[in-house]
Image (cartoon, rainbow, N blue to C red; front, side, top):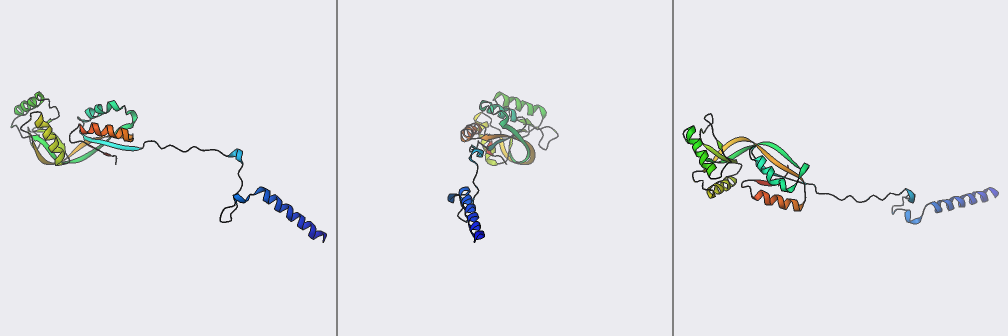
Length: 203
């Protein structure tokens, strides 16, 4: 009997200790007991505020056009958020002035363009497939080429044409990282001022 009594006392002591260490509200719904944590060792971790993480790219530009495009972005003070992506693209359309038959004729036409304030052109050399023509831009779509032609007509260029031209050309895309809605709106305003350009998400 004494042994049984001592065993019951020991069992009661163990139950008391268990009930003091665990509380009813720390038992999960599935019956698994959750261990009590030391309040002094708890650490409050503040929620991370997500910053702007969007990326947009503006282009595409030739090597000659890229510096002017970057200058247009200077008021935004983008710093390290501004980068470049270089690629080669098939230009399916171009705006051009037909062959002038001779070198002197091509450069005479070039001088007339400069007098009208048009400086974005390239004289096709004798070694090219269309010697002494003047290229006024290559584009991926007919719509972009037509927009360029309309801009040239407004400046007084009357002999430029739009045509198909399947050629691979190096192009530059200006990429802007960390774009929030306010910055995106400003980028759209700048992109609208460059006919034939496109503002789109980074690939």
